[in-house]
Image (cartoon, rainbow, N blue to C red; front, side, top):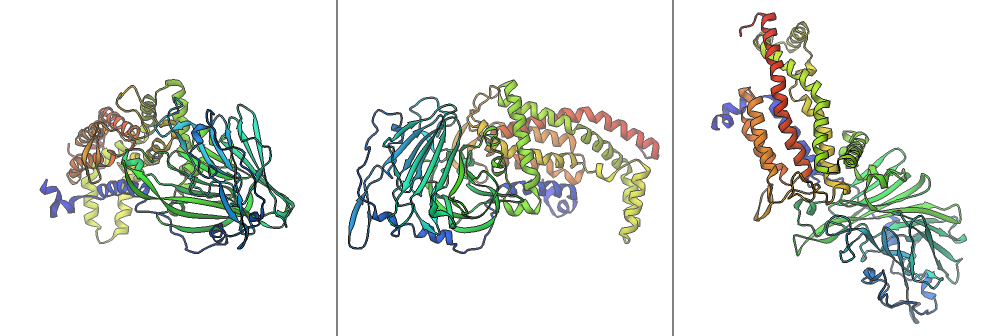
Amino acid sequence: MIRFFGKEGRKKVNKNTLFAVSMILLIMWFFNSKFWYHNVRKRKTPIELAVEKKKESTDSTKQEPRKRKSDTLQGSVFDTLSTVTDAQKKEGIPESDSIQKQVTFDTIFVETENFLCAVSERGGRIISLKTRKYTNAGDERKNSEEEPIELINQNNGGIFNLSINEQSYDDTLFDHESGKTEYSVHGNESKELRFVFRGKNKQPITKRITFFGNEYRIGYSVESSYIKGKTITVGMESGITESEEKSTSRSDQYSRHRAHVIFSKSREHIQRRKADTLTMSGFYRLCAVTSKYFIMGMFGDTVSDAEITIRSFLENRSIQGNKQQKKGNFSIFVSSFSDKEKQTCYVFAGPAKLNEMKKYDVGLEKAVFGVASGIGKFFKADAWFPPICEFVLWLLLKLQTVFKDYGVVILILTVLLKIATFPLTYSSTKSMSRVQVLQPKITALRERYKGNPTKMNQELMELYRANGMSPFNMAGCLPMFLQLPVFISLYVVLGKAIELRGAGTVLIPWIHDLSKPEVIFSLPFSIPMYGDNFALIPILMAAVTYFQNKMTIKDPNQKAMIYVMPIFLLVLFNNFASGLVIYWTFSSVLGLGQHFLINKVKVKETREMQQRTGAKK
């Protein structure tokens, strides 16, 4: 091994080897936001100042005392929401410096096919939103004892926050006048809840929140003659909670929230490791915040001009038992000028399922698969990468409807990809065989014209043309390079697609979730980069890679890669989604078979070139 890594060995490593290693490192850097996040300017905006003034006195402090309508929900289907604290207690709001009056707030509970929701009269805000079909335990909810996922951080403001001309109404009483505190909505039904704020010196302000029985969409409107001609701000202050917070998977512990804004002609995808504020404006279609598997997005009926304020904040999250780690989250506020007496919008809050997101045609799926703004603009990846991810996920879902097992589907997808790239691999192999035969002539030309690079390139191109060769087919790594977008999309899809959350495979019985790393057992310590989980498939993948390299790498200058690449891939893939490792392992196995198949072509092509050029065998 010393001769591969000594002074002479370093000189022998050719450009193709360096290129291959560089591309692999680029993939790691591309997806590890520890080395990349989008920096923004630091300044406080009017919206942020409005949020900071939330606790100041408002006209709502002049409301008369009222009695609470309901205090308990024992024996109800809403018992799971009984931990909501915002409206379980009586809270007082000062009317003035000299007079204190007690104002109490009710909580209205709504059950749909997808949600268990709590709406507080304090601000007319949704303060709890629990998914009925998904739990923190993993896959879809199987019984009522499993804990549903709470999408809203109850300690951070809820959603449907309202400010008018920078004055917050989140602490004011929006009276729900019907007197009923529990609703159930199912099927194609919808239910509109009406909340009214009455200030002594202002026109009543009405909030309407509409729930749909079988949708993850929630309708929202603000209506009053008072809002006409003013700036209306609607917010999702709570951000979105992380459904995998209690997961022991190392990859889930490093999952990060992102904020997204999709304008009519551009997109912004933002990550933060610190608290700050970003403001942007334009004709927006969607603003959203995403976790690993869920999305909360706000959009209107049409594209509209607005100012979007994204405020990142840090919160403690549990990882590996009782350990706490600071993680970033996002509050989003949309401000627009109201030229009417009514402002409407919708919020989608739920799983990032492709079929669900595409229903509304506002770009929810492009937010989930979007590329961070800086690097996305540099490579223009945000234009072509999300469609590739959508296609890969669409194909996986279509194949799953036939074969029912995502493990089998991944194998079939691997075969299809190999078939699609075989013509390119075949052509590249033929060209490489010709290059090996012409290598003495190529070396002689480079020696003869080493002082004249222009003349050398002209002579080389003439030699290639005379022997029916194209420089584009001579790069042995070109087939792999063209597979990189698909590989990267699989990396994202298999790691983020909630359709694969909790999906196992009969092919490997001990894998119960293809979107997470395989874990045979956990080590009592963590190895740098490798982690603390012992997995079997990455070891098998490394062994197959070794034999594949042993058979295909004949250039002495690249001999070090035979030993380095298997170890490198073993460490790299140990924390990747098990579905992705299955894909890469099976792809390597197919690569061995492909090598035997095209090796005959290679031998035949070499013999013909030797006869044509008169080269020695």
